[in-house]
Length: 93
Image (cartoon, rainbow, N blue to C red; front, side, top):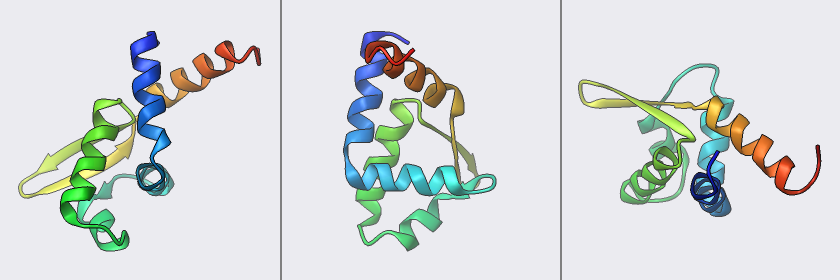
């Protein structure tokens, strides 16, 4: 993971609402419909879209579109790479 990628993921995870959205996506047994996030979080659809865009750009989630719907899932390779890099940077082995 490059330093730029590491910083992008760290920034994405630093926002409490964005982190809560990521937790919800990660907890889903499979894909999660985007409309579920809009329904469950007390924020506007535009704000949800912004947070999802940030998470996707950081590589933390993947989005699959089907007709008018979008489905989200955790992109585990990015999270695994971030965890390894964080451990390396903090000397956690």
